[in-house]
Image (cartoon, rainbow, N blue to C red):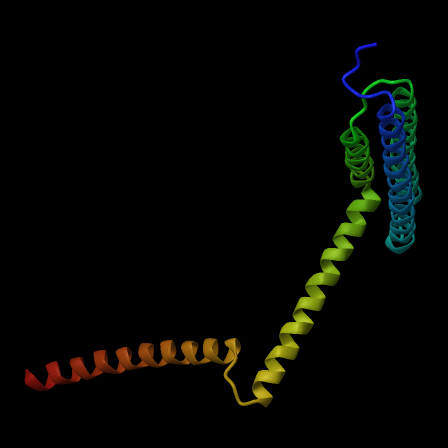
Length: 184
């Protein structure tokens, strides 16, 4: 046999390959389970928190079901590719990563297309805007306490200056008319 590898290194390389594949497989499975758990938690909070109607709940359940099916298909692909690797086919480790990344994209797309997700997103944006407003108000109060001018103060001063300029212009026009009348 004219292999480019000495016979003694082939089992070691094979064992290393299988060991790496097993590690990546189990890491991917663990991440998959974590992602699914997080997904289910967020989904159930969304459905509970939105006060969704029955039709929305059905749509949400269907979206979750499609996402779950995507995860199960990914698990099957992982098993198939692992078997292919064990049978001697060259399987790149990146394939496993790509399977999970593509599945995550597909699963999230399935969920994001539901009205419950839209309601959750709207609620989250509303909460973020409310938090931002509270932070702005706190910053304004802190600046006032420290004796600094705030954006609101500067805007108010600018508005007052514009009003003063408008009044000054009106007084100048009246004064010009009085002077013209006196010169006649």
